[in-house]
Image (cartoon, rainbow, N blue to C red; front, side):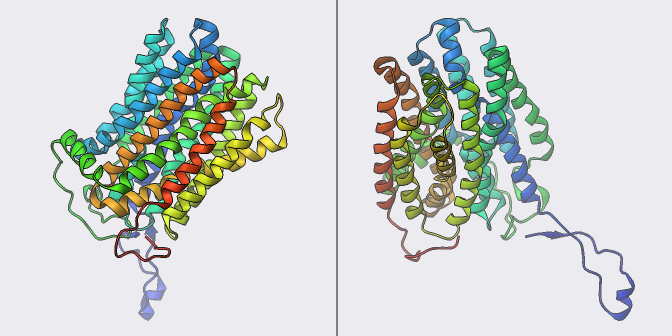
Length: 439
């Protein structure tokens, strides 16, 4: 809800007993959401790099695509495994502190990679440092901001914040591709480090941990006293996992979201550019196609958030996964040296579906697990990244073994069909209407 300022000076209408309209200002929740959006963009800058650097690193150092994919898989796995602990750490130490440390870790890892000479260093810098840093700013960060600052419009805000990652891809993919093509991969890594550091002042100055810090109620809700810092963050995170693991919906959500990660971050983001390059498409053209995915990802994710506020999240997920699987089955037929209209259609279609799965998945976590939903979603996100990590590694191994990525595309398409069925199997919480529920 909006907040009013001090009463404005009365004009002549006050003489007839009518006050002039009081000016309104934006609720602070929207400012916090905007800062979170920019933060996710800065933290996501690194995500533009791996697919662009597989071939340059292979040429510079002679490392196999499997070795490079292993470093990417470590990053993705730690990204996911850090997320649930990050949600609990934000409860303990506050959002600002956790995010500042996370941005610093991303910058350190990206910058240190400039001087690496061995594959194990790639795994430390890209895998460990960047994985931990980006994991602390994962979707559980979005969930924490949304749960604390919003009661109304949660689905919409979730969609917008989720789209921030795609916005980062949109901004940095063409830029990094141009830098790699003209100046090599090292300046691109430095660019990513600087992008992460540039966001820190915004977080320090404008981010707030809780509406009560500025004496406000969350948007669309009643005033809530800020809870005391939660101690035992790691213990609580594990306890929430053990409790959720006793329920069927958790495994269905985790399994379907693992397939989501496998078919997006692990597959397209990591292997699309080198796969297109195998078909003699220039790296800048392939990277531009990924950037176009980012454009339509923003549209699709925000629209998915709007739909999630109005329709059954389970059915939305089933439709998203089914359409994604069908599109992947056709992808090997669309690879050409030049960008043809069918490939453009695939990119637009896939972009609309890229992370449209996040708002309904988060809504189902909230529906099933209440106050622990941010941490549960963190664990579900961990499965997303484990799926992504496996495909980032196995995709590289498959390319080394078979000489092409075709078998990877077909396998991912079949897995998406399985995810659609899993989404429909999630039980509805008693007391909710059978049809659409407005959240």
